Image 1 (cartoon, rainbow, N blue to C red):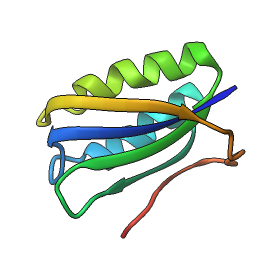
Image 2: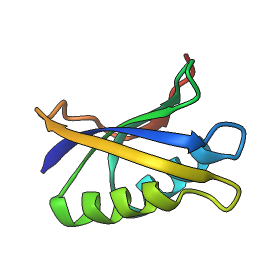
Image 3: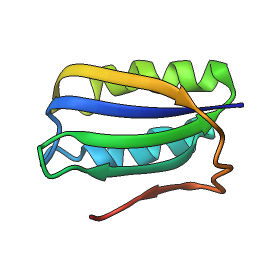
Image 4: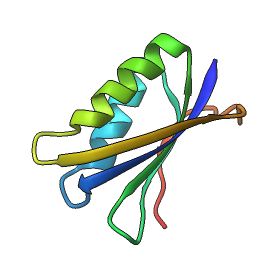
Length: 90
């Protein structure tokens, strides 16, 4: 298990990015959360086995159909032991 903090940049708000992220996370067994940031980015904390996190991160680089992802930044930090994956409102 590992934990990633992920920031997704581009046209990622108003295109169902958060809802799609939750669907993919649930499908892959990824736990954590996703939220919109005031600057237009999407921020994600994700925990899973390395193989599933790699697939999840690959999806984050594409996003849903109407998204235009320009950059994805991620860094590994300590596990927080999330129980599920949630869409968080700021």
